[in-house]
Length: 96
Image (cartoon, rainbow, N blue to C red; front, side, top):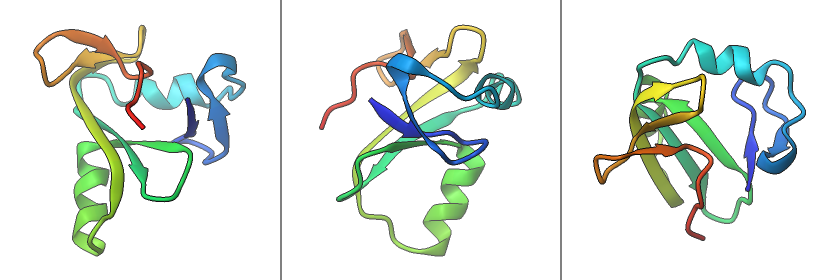
């Protein structure tokens, strides 16, 4: 799964993370709700905080092919509480 690094915006493959800014950026998201979205006709996912997501929605209508969120984000193991109520990885399988 490819995604845009929230800190530097370069595309990263989750299997071979090569961005030294990523971990420190995710530390600031401790305990927050985070979103993983993918715009229609774009390959890479984006990770956003709840606040960033709502700002994006207010600017313009979004056309997404995928949107998932997690509550109580833990940046140590990159997990959060998913919509099923269990703790899961934010890098888990994304439906295409």
